[in-house]
Every structure is written in C-alpha cells, then in structure tokens.
Length: 219
Image 1 (tube, rainbow, N blue to C red):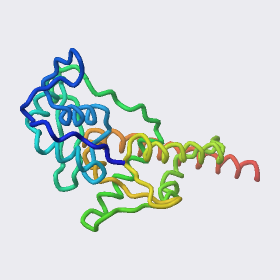
Image 2: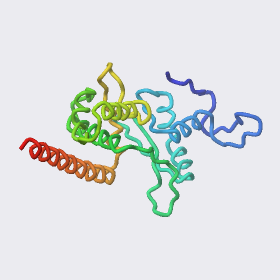
Image 3: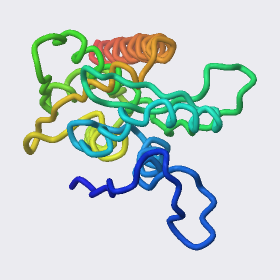
Image 4: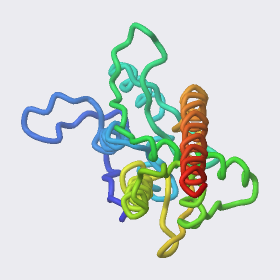
C-alpha cells in the first residue's frame, strides 16, 4: 500500500513537524531519506509518490546521505534506488550487511545469473522448483533431504520477505527484481562464485567417495 505524502509544503520551506523540531527538510523529503536508510531499496513501481519526491529532491537527498557516509544509487530505467557505504576506505560502514547463509548466497547467484540471461526479454519469472534443483548439488551425503529442503525454502522466503529480490506471482513462482543486478556487486559475485565452485567440488568428491565405499562393501 502506497503511503500518502503531504505535498502542501515547498521543498525549500522550513516548518517544524513537532514541537522542538530542528530539522530543515520538509516532511516528504524526510520520508524518502528514512525509506532509503531502512532499505533494502525504494521501488518506483511500488512506491510511486516516494519515487517522485526522490527525483525532485535528489540533490538534497544525496547531500544528506553523504553526511552519513552513504552513497545513493539510482536506476532510472528500472525505477529503483538504494544506498550503500561510501566508496572510501577511511569512511565508517554505515550500512549493515545482511547475515546470509551459504545457501542464501548461492541462491542469490542463481537468481542473478537467471536475471542476466533473460535480460531484455521483459519480466523474469522463476519457479521455486527450478531454483531448488540448481541448489541440489549442495546437499552432501550426510545432509538429511528433509532438513536440506527446509533450509532452501527458508532462503527462498528470505529472498521475498527480507531482501525483496523476489516478488511472488503465484504459489511457487516469483519475479526476480532487476535491482539484483546492482545489489550484488562484481566483487561479491566473484567471492560467491568461488565459494559456489569450491563447495560443488567438495560435494562431488563426497559423492564419489561414498560411491567408492559402497562398491567396496558390495565386492
């Protein structure tokens, strides 16, 4: 549901919003700042009023975010925006990283690769089963199938409810948000890919070892 934003105050006009308010920004601009800081991102398609304010007050919003060591990223074509830590080694990290399990990061990689492979074809819809199938390689022989399925399902729910990179379009299908292209940067992709490949190799080794043990027992 889109939240109504007061529009009767000019951007440059200062009026206190409560007794003792020393802020200089109008109500609508503060709401955009708060939305960006809360994260994970602001969607123009879902929050049209906030998006309009962001574009109107972009310079002011960028300045205020910079004072918090934050950088504003805007994708005008896909209509989304988010903040990330200032690109300076000396700057404190203002944005907290979301704690992700390995299956979370593996699923992010699968979703991002799917998104990029379908780029230019409109909305990208994926099925839960096809994503889960690509992650099946990470179920080691000692991992209970039911427990593994529960963990993968938990990651799917996190993609929808916390990271918001998936938007449900049915019971077991979801649209991949184009924001995923920018939320996960090149360095993160390289790190995730390297870990993805390492675990896959280890899993293959475990299965091979298990197969050899079984053959020895049958001999």
